[in-house]
Length: 237
Image 1 (tube, rainbow, N blue to C red):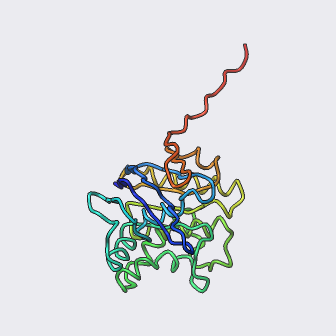
Image 2: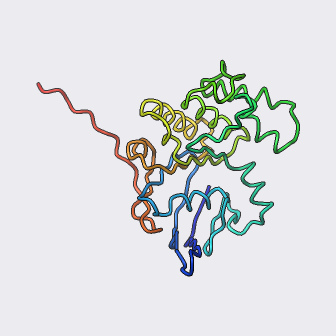
């Protein structure tokens, strides 16, 4: 689905050039739940921004389903983000004056400008994430876990093949965070097998519940591995 080849991203900071990503090469396959981990400053957020066409590489190639996205125009990047990518954020980014279903429907309304069919689809997605009974509630009337579920439903509104999650459990307690991780895994592993979920996280426990862990250090891939499921010890005879 996504292929990065020798991707470099540099920024000017004061009078110096900072290389946030340094020759990153990787492939993201559909049907997989991938986590990106590493210390602060390793390049995790920069990589996520490039995957979601929020930014462009200084050099190198990023292809999505065979098409180059690294050098899209601003308008083309906006269209790509709207139709191909669903974003999930640590602090939910819900609109406080809108109900849950209205928040979920925002991407459809932005894409078509038409209200028709948006409420039905938003309600279906709220049911998928277990919040059908909260469709009319505003964010202030929801718990943190419920707001994150609304945000996940919103990310799925345009049925994107790529879902990007930035610290989706970082503002949640451990039990609620585990529920969100299970939901994200279900989204990545649904019957279609055509969607990938990529998550940036500092939570090693959350990372080890994904299919693949990519560790960044100093803008480079330090390791790329599939977690080994824990073995069940036999009871002593």
